[in-house]
Image 1 (tube, rainbow, N blue to C red):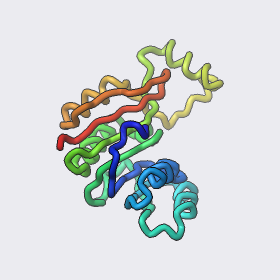
Image 2 (tube, rainbow, N blue to C red):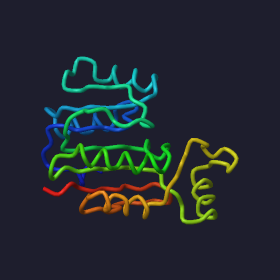
Image 3 (cartoon, rainbow, N blue to C red):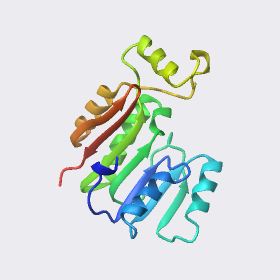
Length: 179
């Protein structure tokens, strides 16, 4: 993901921040960056708030992604890691539009995500590779194929839309708002 981020950024948004791992990586790259992380899980919010306690440049907010993002301002980078696949497909598409509208010109969206396999057989191969029995598949997953998501991004207005890395059902999708 790092190689697809811009050389400079002043504000970043981490959607589904969890324990704040992506913000931590971003702060190593851009120590002065202002970061906002949103998540709905109280244990994850507690972990990320503890991680960045004393760093006034990081704001961690409770937010359920089933609802539209609050007005958080504009960002150079919006990132997400394994969060959006829990949303309904209609909500995914809406969220992508919200992300686009929050990006500054030239801004980048990077989404490391769990996507649907093209067939049930390949999905079962993915589960097997992860040592997950089919009956233990996560029922909160609402997987959507990568091609549909990339097409949505293009329709919304993202440019340079691509999948830069994929292993079975795990993929890095990126797009940019034109400068």
